[in-house]
Length: 146
Image 1 (cartoon, helix red, strand yellow):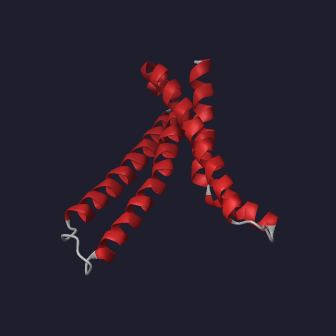
Image 2: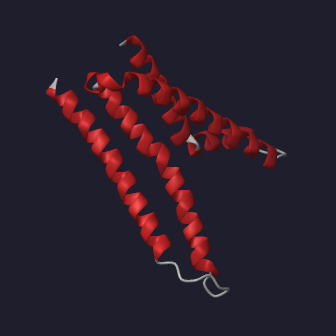
């Protein structure tokens, strides 16, 4: 029982640490940007790419937090109602983002020359979102049964 509790806390601490590090790095980069000019346009483009990278790490952070909940759900007994609502929203959002990006990729990549390779790489590339959605579904089912 103690190992489950330690694993749950480790997942949660890892997720919060990644979120704190990424947020701090993003804020420090934003604060260090010079005033915009044609010469500093590249720094603003790099900052925009860093924002996209930060948004791409959010499903990883949420997946770690959900994994911590799934390992030891009784530690979060008083938060079951909030977990149900959040996990439902995360499942809808994760599957929705996956479907929208796949749809946009298929539309923009027509005509599909190599459909199996394209679909495999698209599914693998969107794995942070659908894995987060699957963990959210599992968390919703776990909170429903408790």
